[in-house]
Length: 277
Image 1 (cartoon, rainbow, N blue to C red):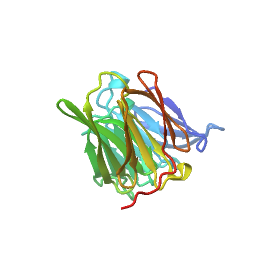
Image 2: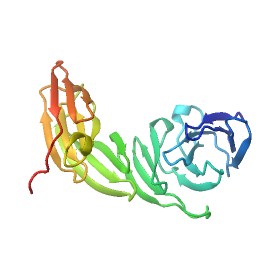
Image 3: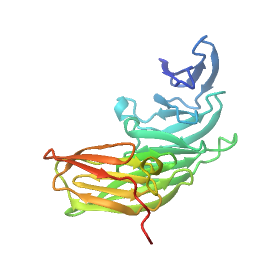
Image 4: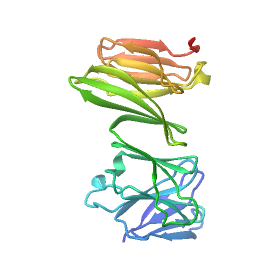
């Protein structure tokens, strides 16, 4: 079949070539083939991911190859980019996961974090050479996240659900290194907005903003709230007369918001001391 080419990043400047049954790594300077890896079964489409610890993730899609945007992911192969040795397989056949709505990352090189429109799955990589060992999911949450973010090993997911006529919104916090749900906090209950801002979040680091803890700022519709990442407690919340259309934040925790009527607001989310118990 036709081979495709991927380039590594600045830390791995070599060239990866792959087709339906092989992966080759080539020296980016000399063109020498450094290693090749053969799939156990042919795949119709694949793409690569290079997470922070330099493990190579080859994502295979075999269910539907008629259109790339409609191809669902079957499995993820984790390969050592130094020597091409197989490390682990993550089975995705029971999930409706597509390339275009998927984020794949690693936590501490032992856990793979798969975030997609319909949920999040955290899996421990197989240790050792036993490729026949069945891999179990450390954490699997099927939920429609309207917003997700990763801050190191902390995963933040915002999800909404309907209790007519209201739309309730909650923030879920997961430690990906331990695959544990740390907290979930309901932040808003409001009538469904027909226009306006769908939602966005920011991390406000305690050191840069001189706060007692790291905070997560989330804004949806005409509502904005500040949560303590350690506890999930709502530190502050703000309700505006109009839907928020734009949000900017500075490194020191100054938040600037614009509403539908072009009104500008500023919030100082810095120098916040820990409240008394």
